Image (cartoon, rainbow, N blue to C red; front, side, top):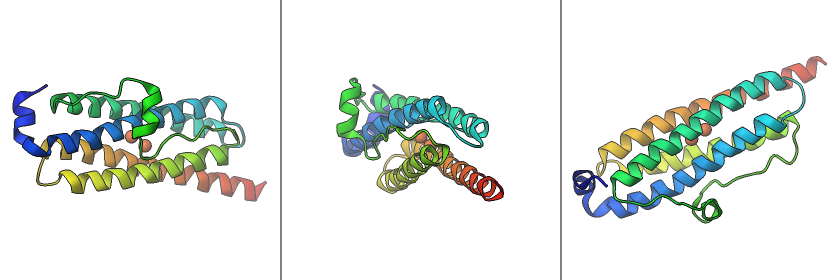
Length: 165
Ligand SMILES: [Fe+2]
Ligand SMILES: [Fe+2]
């Protein structure tokens, strides 16, 4: 733990750590949701979707890493057991049981919109209290906003393709 890091944040540190731990669990779910989605997805525009899903998976894993480092700096503990992720996560995990491209992308879109809401709320929570965490969350939020647009674009292209066919 960073003594000075936690000292700057003071009495707010434990509440901020609780929120970061929730986001950390959601990032692992998001990572796996994209990773497994890229393996099972079927249907038109499959190659374009896989490329995007793999990129997003890498981003979500990087987000988990960024959050882990900050949690530890603030003196918090990581959620060590995957089975505990469900209890903490705000957005959760939706297994891609229907592998059709539209169904997989729709699940991803729901998850991204949930993540955007979570990070927007977190920025309000930490704003004025913890500048370092605010920077990290803002950077993650930018990625989630891009992810939402990417998925919307893929769905738009899919609709156009299916109308043509
Ligand atoms: Fe993320
Ligand atoms: Fe994302």
